[in-house]
Image (cartoon, rainbow, N blue to C red; front, side, top):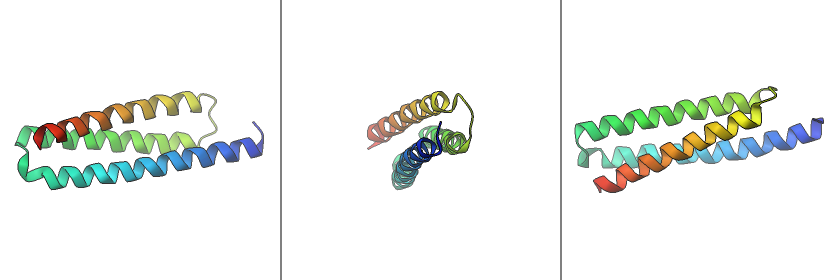
Length: 97
């Protein structure tokens, strides 16, 4: 991969990860705002899902900066898991409101 292609790919991942950072912050705020409406089990489940989402986010940040051959495949898998968790968290919040 040429230096220019690598730079463009890096910019692409930076944009995606910036959007995810904002999404995670929004979900954290929604969970915090809904905290008093949620029972203890639901709170624990949401906190666990948020922590998993953050973990995937940090893994994606790591892979976005590596030179590994399977980087794109791994990032796609990580982002798919992040989307799944985001959907689960939003669904849980909708049920509670």
